[in-house]
Image (cartoon, rainbow, N blue to C red):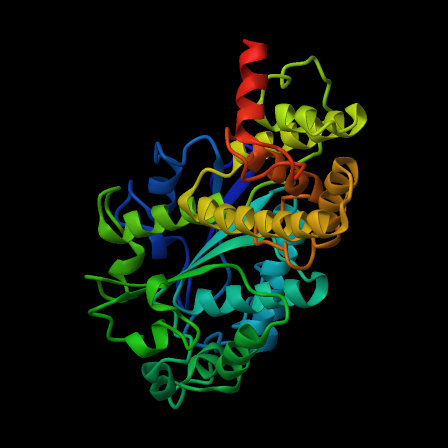
Length: 404
């Protein structure tokens, strides 16, 4: 039996999974009988059609006992009902990891929304995935009032109960200390995280909810307590809007790998500036044809990266590609190389720097796309990117006029 209860499952490419905390369950997310956090997300027009929505549910209660009137052996062997016990955070994380392997493996991106102890369970699961595969299907993690360094009330309650989950939640327990340390020091960076805390939370204070590694830009306060933060009543509630915006932001950061597309030259680029500049420089027809293919793939890639975050990364990358060109242009002048040699050196340099100087967080970009970027930069009516030191602007203008 799956531990995931689906609010919406239509076999979409992406999924949002809710993970509750101590003494929680489906009711953690329910504002009333008809409204819940998962149902609001499932019906959001901004998200609709792209996400399945489910909840990971595990056993949790304050008591470890099964009653005083019957012995544990009677409870175990006379009942057909499954016996459940409180498991430590690391073991619940293993159960969540199994659900990923069995029920969530088909999703390209999974986003976790975790409340209270559920955030620690989620972190432990993600760290296991990173340690095993150097990657995780979790592409965004939203922390709602999660006690990243423990909760004082759990420390006090642990004196009254032998509940292993309360022990794990105690301030600076071995469990929370190890998770915080492993998260910060992970060789493979964990997924982007949004930390949201309740200004009126009496159980998890701000210092614990924001974690050691939380950046100011990723930390948000809401006018809620520990319970209300997980129960928005509408799409206009602040906590709901923060979460939905975070999912959209995380989604924009990750895209499927860009396939290199075969280019069929039908002369559609013959009047583009980057081609005219190669013609003027007398670059060989075969090299010009390859340049058209690179340009085509770079143009297709640019259509994919449309968010503000992507555009900033692209701007940096274009600047670095241009710097590679400038260095090779100096070599071209100093060594009196031919235009063919010049173009070839630029292409070769870009490929050699693909995982070095030109490495980018836009991991979907291939060296082919980066070679196309130099031709995108050349696709202007100027001499900023040309393939011969003898090229003049008036030569380009004359060539354009002859094409008209």
